[in-house]
Image (cartoon, rainbow, N blue to C red; front, side, top):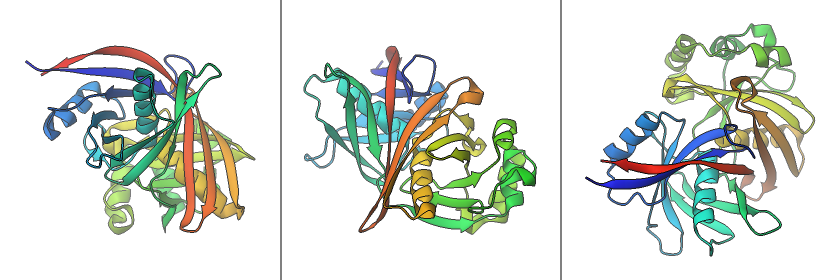
Length: 297
């Protein structure tokens, strides 16, 4: 029998049982791909991370991120939570972690309180903002289970965007539409079938309403088993970059509240800035440890 230690944390919150849940295996040496996927499915969280030695000794670790059905190239709250766990366990933890991931090198800066204790982290998206195809209002509305009139198009149509992770369909909605939204699995499947090239065979929907720098958001990804996500860093960063793109400013910051309708309120602090290679974004927040244990295989 082999035993592998794990920690669970709530990410993008300052209290237990809020934010987005994450399971972290701080030392995943000895686990194969199939076992990592099976463990992620067993935890049944939106993501589980597995920490391995870095291929490049100048980097801190290789981090693999699995959702319930597949490995992900990058995700926000798993990086924030993983850095938090590693930072809390290491008294000599660096200010900045460099994680090797399929999407590229990911930099995660630790957040500390006045006494120097690690309280959270901020992750920079590994790639500049990439704006993809526009999808019909009818498609976005059907996926969200809301009337087409609840989709706001004054600033932009539903638009696919990413910055190193999975594409998100960014869709502005009315406050009433945000509250009423209920994902429709059949509509997601039809969207992927109707737009195979644009969606690349996968679709998740990030709906939001905005009041200046304050944003309320919800994220649906039923094709991966995540009917709704409490906090989605890899959607917050392309949204921040896209909002900066629309505003035309040099930099910007947004407080994104998510997970309220799930009873797991989360606060994501997103920033974006223009750089020579495009618009770069980051997202940060606090974390809280919840459980510790061992998986025995």
